[in-house]
Length: 149
Image (cartoon, rainbow, N blue to C red):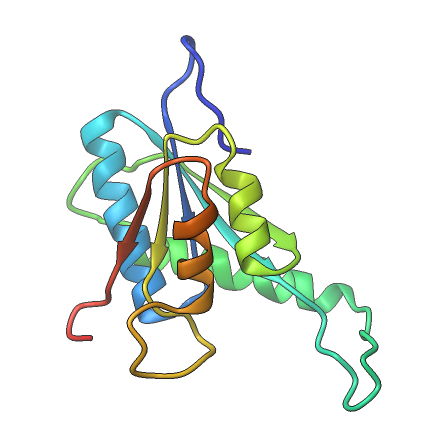
């Protein structure tokens, strides 16, 4: 998880869910990492879908694999071909996105999140995950809006 020490580069943690604002956050984190000689840890959280009306979860490794592939695809699409590559470590973790991001932010130099994820209500200024991260992160947080939103 995101840590820094005298012998390592600073770490910038970025939440990625495939939404336009998380893609913008990933691009922003990569540009900032170049400026600070930092590395980037791209984090995607996943959860089991609840069974309708029962409050139970359906286990299935295919959900984790789909999240891992989606994260890898997003990182590949958003890497800037015009600049030297920034090290981007990819993590997929089970759990609520805000909880997972806050865990990775421990010891990180910076946490970067998109202003709006894939769920929730359109038109709100901040999504629930970005709001929770801003209020509870153990490091500075940057909230990035997608262009044109």
